[in-house]
Length: 160
Figure 1: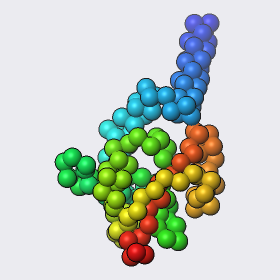
Figure 2: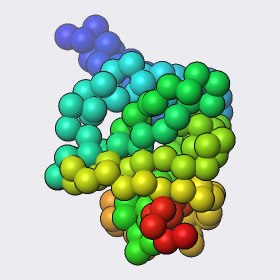
Figure 3: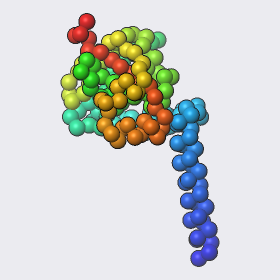
Figure 4: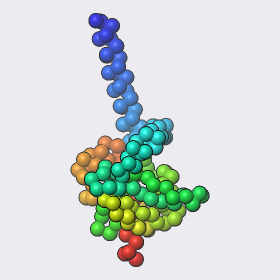
């Protein structure tokens, strides 16, 4: 019995350490943590999200963008919130993601939300504080927890 208690205690301490490293690593944008989480999402979570992304009531929407060097079309499942003049996307992993570089390189993309495709352009990064009202309270809490302070703002193409 004592061995079981010791094992459970060690597991609890190990889990607390992993959670602590995860939270601190994400807040500090520590590359080993951010890259590990990004890799896990890319391999496991994103393919599952793509089954419903962009549909009504889906957790994620689709950002369709063109590769900078390949010219290939990519689809990335993201939390994309509507704004009166376009959309906003919290940059949870910071400003150094392939999809973000692709959007800035081409200056345009498409957002698929609720089974409708919206052409967007004029990407710009903005402070979360400037667009915070577009996000749900639960998202706002997560942004504070993980230190998310920047968003991508995209404008409907029809506004130019």
